[in-house]
Length: 389
Ligand SMILES: [Zn+2]
Ligand SMILES: [Zn+2]
Image: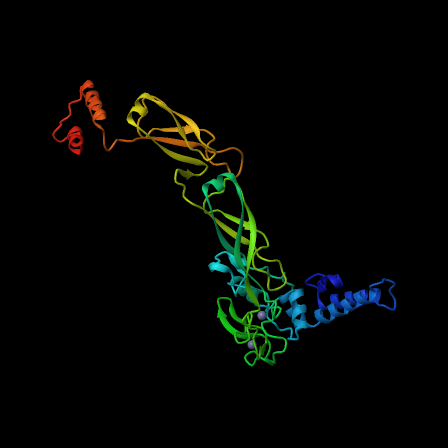
């Protein structure tokens, strides 16, 4: 909608006042409505004038650099002076749920700010890119089946959004404004600090007015003066097949909006996969425990076992030991990166019967005798079985 003032004049972000004035003279001559034939010359000329007016005024330029184009224009429109410090509602730490990765490390007076103050000569002459909005985090629960197939999922989360009522100003347009007495309207307070590099003047955002330089008689009732509200937003995300528990998906530019007219942050979606009743996952492989009876293990059997791709028949070889593991190639999870699937490992577990009917007991006694086993009945297995019936 609006053009950056540096672009309007065709100068770089760190152009000197001299360069800006020179560029202005050239552009002004080119687009002066009395001279130019271009249809929108007048509008362009006004933009050029405006750009020069802001960029050749040290205070205004500093505010412009700090706030970014859109916010600066908005601030001007709403009539508060350009010393708005831009430590806005969407800045440092406003992210949801603690947001350990939010803010790109620059929010709320972090190390970046200190270095800027120490090395940047107090505010810096060069233009800073408008800071992007905070990253937000949310969680998504899916099933192992979802992770196997890949799934498109709709989900909702809360995102700070500029308050419609006050257009982000935090107060009604009719509110009385007075200069903040704490910072004399500068929006910033300066302290001198002792650091390993010597005495450093540290400028921080005024706490009383939160950097606006102005106090208002009323606050917006819809956002309680914060300038933003939390909106419930519903989005759809593609969860790729093969995703693992604890992995994070990123949706670019779906995080918090930038307080300075920069790009929005990202939305990070932490995916958690519910435990499955039948399968245990280990990377791309799945593990399944197959219960078989003693005769099945002895004689072998063809059984049906579940996989995430439907049931398959499975041969229990004759003479299988309890705890033996067999591999079904390609029946595991799809590989997130790369082709194919992991494997399904089937661990056979021989189930010892907890009770026997009479026929089974006789057969088993006969089996033991035929094998020449001497079982001490008094304390042994058969005795216990007999007592159970
Ligand atoms: Zn103040
Ligand atoms: Zn509001």
